[in-house]
Length: 377
Image (cartoon, rainbow, N blue to C red; front, side, top):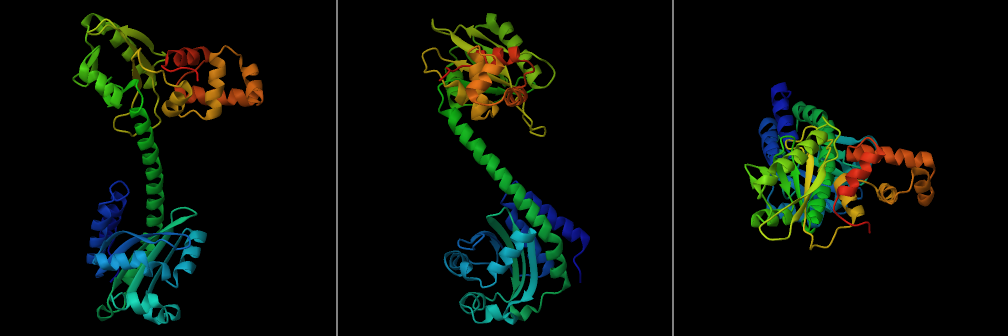
């Protein structure tokens, strides 16, 4: 009997949930086995040459079977090379078969020493390319006594394969973004300058380690009901004004460039506060930063501004060099000559910088960048 639409929708729903929570893969495999009468299923990942296959999630498969597959037998699948070549060429490949009927399996140690002893007999397999180097495979099997897989398995594999290809491509992009975010977070936590991110309501949505330490001491500012507050209440209106202006600009509703002030703390040394707009293109992010607040300790070693620009605004090395030259007072034509590019190329780079920093004019950009902490090295 063919798989029902409601069953397919349920399975695909579970599968796509695995894109953001890998723990859902196992639940998907369990439900697939239940609906289609399989007893074992697994996701595995491979490089194009099938040298290091890895099981990502499985049901009905023992830890010993997984170990044998990953350490030896998985790379000896005689049909893997042709399947991988087809998946890389076409984006995906799928098959429903009785393994013992295929000549390439019969005389192989993969079949004789691994598949047959573990009862991996009737197989439905789907393979999709993640990129030009990696592939993922879904394999569902049942023993000889359960009978040949029917039209339900063939229909499911055919419908599921393009979804698997797309979902793992999305997950690969998310993993790349997460790695970038983790490395950026680690870099920010190594800085002596405190950094606080504020959302459109001026609420704190993130802090680096230095900011957390400064807030904890309440030397010059503190966090009250998720908002930044000055220890000296007389300075609160000025701080509120800077934050409101920057948040409004970061939310696309203003054109202010933020500013700086010194907050008097518990000792005689003031703390410098710099507030700047921040425009994020992540429209569906739950807590999207709209402003960044820097807490500058005068005794700390200043940051390199080019590093700050690259991490905070995503400026390329060439764009960072361009704005550094503009900050030195050079006009765009002379800056282009220093960079050994045409004036039109420099103008295009400047437009990219405007977009990334949510500024609209060169004077506004210079004002923003001049207010950032850090030196010019």
